[in-house]
Each structure stands twice: as C-alpha cells, then as structure tokens.
Image (cartoon, rainbow, N blue to C red; front, side):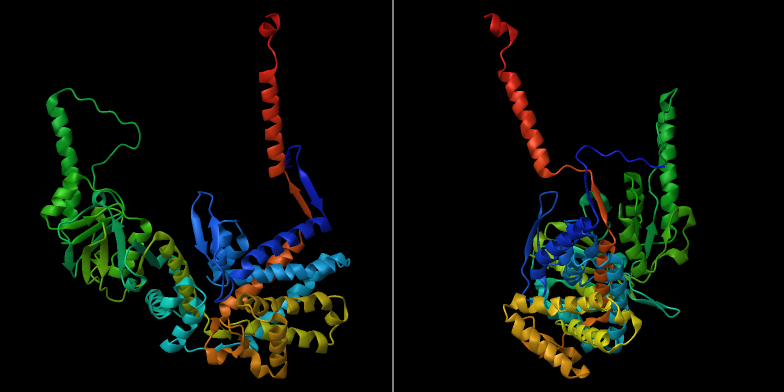
Length: 552
C-alpha cells in the first residue's frame, strides 16, 4: 500500500470544478497560441528557464518552454501542425464546457467525441484528400513550399524547399517494401554564424565542427580516402579505478614507459596495415599514437560523438570497430569522394563529401546570428517532416482551413441524416460540437489577417454546402479572402492533419476524464506572504531590547 504525505497547503478540486479548471487552462493556452497561425502570424518572445530569449512563431518551440506535452507529441509524430493542435484542442474543450454546465456526464461527451474522431478520419481519407505522385519533383516542392509559407524562412522558400526535399530523399531507405526516413538520426544541422542565408546548402555527406585539441591532421584534403571508424581509444591501457605502481629501480620506470609505447605501437600497426587515409575514433588519441599515424600519412579525428560516427558510417560505407585487432578490409569505408578540412570564420570543420549513394546528410546553415540560425533550423525541421510524411503516406489535403470546413460540413450532414440509435440520444449534441470546433482554424486565419470574420466564414460555409467538389475552398492566409486551394497550390500531407485531429480530440477526452486534482504545492502568493511574515518577525526580534540595554 502506497502512502503519500502532503503538506498543510494541499489544495483539492473535485468533480466539475476540476474539469472546469482544466478547460480554463486549455482555453488560456489556445488563446495565447492563436495569433501564431497562418502567414500573418505574430512572433512570441519567450524567456527560457536559463534566462535566454526565444523569438519564434513555432507552436512547439513556444510551448516547449511551458512543458506542454500535446505539442511535443505532435512534433515528434509528424513534425508540423503544433500550433493548430493547441488551438483545436482548446476549442473542443471550450465547446464541452456548456454540456458539463447543463449536467451532461463526461462519459457521454467522450463517447460522442470518439465517434466524431472515427468519422473525421474516414471523411478525410475519402472526401477531402487527393493522391500525389512522390516521384514528381514539382508537386513535392509545392507541398513543402506551402508548409514554410508561414515561417521566417519563407523569403528564401525556393532554396529551402530544394534543400529540405533533397535531404529527405537522400536519407530515405526502402528495404523489402518497408520505407524508413529517420530525420532525427541521419540529417544533421551544422549552424555556422556569419554569411547570408542564401549561402546555406546541403552536404550529401557528413561534417563536424572540430577544435584544435580534438584532431591531428597530416593533410587537409584527401581524394577517395579509405576511412576507418573506431570505438576504442588509441592510448595505453589505463586502470579502471585507483591503480598504484611500485618501482624498485630507475630502469623499471623506463621499462614501463617502453611497454606502454609498445602497446600503442601495436594498435597503430594494426591500423596502418589496412592503409587508411583517415581514422575517426570516439575516444582519445595519445601523442605517441598521433606520431605513428602522422609518420604513416594518416589523418586522425578524435572524440567524435556516437551520432556523428553513425552518420559517417552511412555516408562512406565503413563499419564501426570496437578493437583494432578486429579490423578487416571489409570494414574500411571507400565510398567517400573527398575528405577535407576547411576553415569557416574562426573555426575548423571536417567534411566528408562527394559520397557515392550516401544515406545521411548535413545541412550547413548560414545566418547573421544564433537566434536567426535557431529559427531557420526549426523551419527546416518542419519542412523536412512534411516531405517525409508525404513520402510515407502519399495523400494531400487542402490547406487554409479548407479540410476543417469540409469535415465540419460532412459531420453536420451525418448528424442530421443518420437515423441510427447513436444520433437519437443526447450524444448527438457533443458530436455536433466537434463540427463547430473545426471552424476555429479558418476563423483564426481570417482573424489574423484582420478580415471580416462573420462575413467570410458564412461565405465559406455556403461554398462548401453547394457541392462536395468545393472541398478545396479555404482562406488565403495573406489577404483573408476565400480562394480555391487547388489554384493557390496550398496542400498539406494527410498524415499531419490526421495526427492534429487525433491528438486534439484525444487530449480533450483525457482532460475530461479527470475529476479530481490534488495539488500539494504552495501558491506564489502564499510563498510571498510567508516570506514577508518571516522577515517581519526577524526584524521585530532585532529591534526588541536586550537584557543588557534594559539594565543600562
């Protein structure tokens, strides 16, 4: 039996009070994020816990500082739609507030929401999406362009789209009918302050920032190098913990040094026997080993990260070896066309370039400051995830709030025309509330453009009601006018929209199931009051006359 001891300031909210407090919190967060949606989005300045400043309109970047799990889930699954999912979840909870006040049980609302979620997914796949040919480069570029149209990097959208699409196609692996695209592990961003954003480019290979103490270079440029990757140190064997040696005479110390040198020499000879040009190790390289390698004309890079070594293995065809005794010709990488060390600004970088069929890549970003580079990296992350989502599930939905409005119209039709038992009960009303919640996306886009919300939203509803073929009509995020997304070329991967709706509705369901909140932390006001009280008591004690002063 677990026993939890809470302090005297424990606060407990039960029943509807707990549900309403969660709804209020969700609405507050959604209202904060709402102005970050669309091309006319506003930026937010967030102070992180370490005192740094983040300037962005990326929903996940803003909410990451507030430890909001919902946007993190969206970001990890599909990498885009983090702002939309917060706005939609907040609106769904806001719609549920009225039903709770009327006495409708949370379980009934949840049942209706689950039914609505199933219908939303079905409608999106059958009525509100189109297939795409992932081998058509122009179509793919259009999709990626619509993703970064609302981002900071939109001014350089042509360059960014080319880089993002090429990067995803480079790291894609198709084996036995299973497609794997691991952006997080095999696509790396090398952020170099200085230069213009136009100087950014895709390196179909690997690069690594190095400092002088981390590498020994015999030559700074090698064509068609043979590369050996090690996960062991090229140093003499060291004691695991406290190790002591006792010498009886001076020759004993000299003998020990000779044995250490011989140990390192044997390891270096095992490497030199395979005639490599470059050796990369995750551990250290002693001065003696560096000398032997330099004498053999071998360049060495030490203390690389495990992730960097894995990327180098993917681009040059080498295998990582844990001991020099296990080296064979098959594990030596020969697919790299050029190994080069370049000085950019005041720093040195290693480049493994011109690789044959590389399955990892590095995006070299240039920009005026670290803040700009960080924002560009977030934008590229979104763009690459869009390309990945389309390649994994090649269907598109229209942007600009069109798909949400199409889903809202279909949900309304079903609730009015379906004569099943489900729609004869009270579940019908929470079900229809999902339809009203969906309208928040086009409503927010119009609002952020400064348009006439009521007029434009009513016109958009009427347009979708005319025909199912009008499912692609939405809101132009720049002007706030209604436009056909087919003509405007604004499309989103279906995976992003499906995940957005799934995450939003499931989060709302999760919060509605909470009916008891026990918080054992002090409020800020309580802390301030207790601090001021203790300070006042201390001051009174200091001013209180002592026995000696009373005698005087």
